Image 1 (spheres, one colour):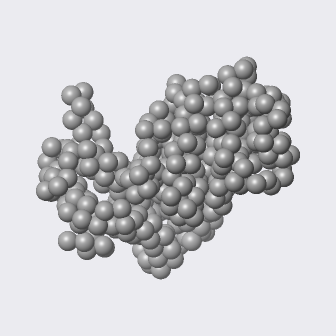
Image 2 (cartoon, helix red, strand yellow):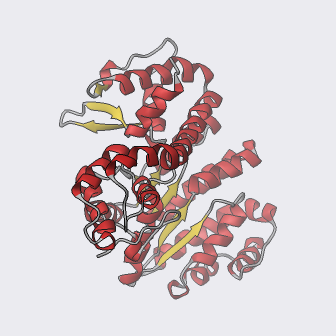
Length: 391
């Protein structure tokens, strides 16, 4: 197989480098749970994994409903996109309407949304409970509820809350309803480029409504995966001009082995007639790192700044010392080695650690005795820490 290099959005077919273990792990996690939450930095491969899941569902002829919630700002818009995404063969729209009284004001509103027509936002908000109960009952009566895949779900929540900070009651009601839908058989894959834990703490949401979803992290390529990626992209196009020496130097200069970094580097170098490996340092310094590193540094900066909006003292007294300890440790940092400042509890620490995991700063492993060891989530996170000069 020749890997066709493409830098940009989610890829499939000959543009996608398959990661069988990771892909199978995601499918297995979905199959054995109510669903998956996959929040993290942009450009790490979430969209490609999401597209893979949808492909597998379609190949197995299992119903799937997908929509992008990035630009949505209300429950009404979410319902409209949900109804529009439901596969016709599932008949879930008709079933849901059938469980709502014919004289209920929400029925006409939902019928309009189901046909793609905008309707009154205030009406939908007022009668939302009837709407979500109808969907729940329809799911319980469905022989094959669809997998619901929503991209940028966390950004949708942020849009709603920024538009109306007092609307967290509606958000809590939505999250509770979606949990009931999962209990009724609708599995979910919720993805997003910002974490939900930080949003929940900032806006005082009930985060428990997402606890039944399994978190799923997208790691960098392993060294072996990166070498295979490069081989598939270069072997035939270069007709032997790309050598093992090129690969070794490329991995050394690339450093961060997310697929987007590898693709960007290969495109800038050129795989058909690559220059000498000695030229790679200059190419990465001028054409790869300035683009990709700045993108990721900006993401880290925005997330760190948001922690200050949530709790300025917590950002300074808790988050910074935790990051310093983990980022600068030669080996992993045990949880018990993370100190608590006055006024903060172990519960506060756990919540901030969850934020840092979702936002791509740190990662942990856990032994048989439930001891967690914390490490930087990526080399890029360590580079951001070094560059940020927070201490």
